[in-house]
Length: 245
Image 1 (tube, rainbow, N blue to C red):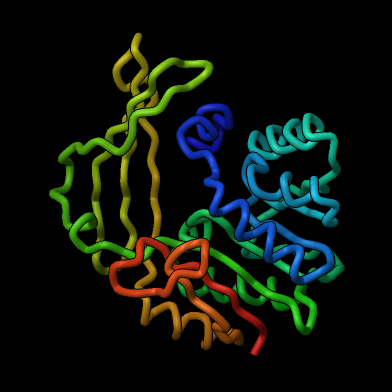
Image 2: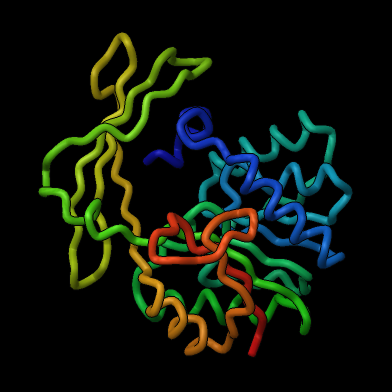
């Protein structure tokens, strides 16, 4: 799994300045403690904590949490990191902002998983608190690529591995709306040095409205990017802010 190798994950998928600024501004606007679900290696929650915001991060991966803790120590800040599942957690306290960044919500697939997630969030959110998340806006042209056909995803420079290239195959199931992709990650010394699955569910724009409402939330705002751009059919992202209905 890619999440078992935080250094490789960070090299391939660094948080963008736009993502960092969006979640930081949200945390500062809604003064109070912040909870990052599926916090990963701490790329977003550690910079938030560095601004003096009380911060907690929860993730299922012990390796990612260890990397996140190292990041916090290097930044000279404190984050409480908790090993847990965003579908079912009980921290016995409430937060002003709970967020799930960078498509991490798409690791949930079934309706009962989303119901459990929203229920756990409701229990931990202040009455005027905000649930925020960003997910991609599905592009059916990409999802319709022939199964098994490799296409290039990225080429990046890694401090540990040199120039790393990533190719992927798609296997999109229209019934479950899950794309069971496989990433083939190569270094200059070894082709396909890592072969990792990456399974993400698609949530289409109209479906998202029903998903939020059915689970007791209201969508306050949906932008198409991280700087407040209008959401349209051409938007790459669905950047959402919700409150308990």
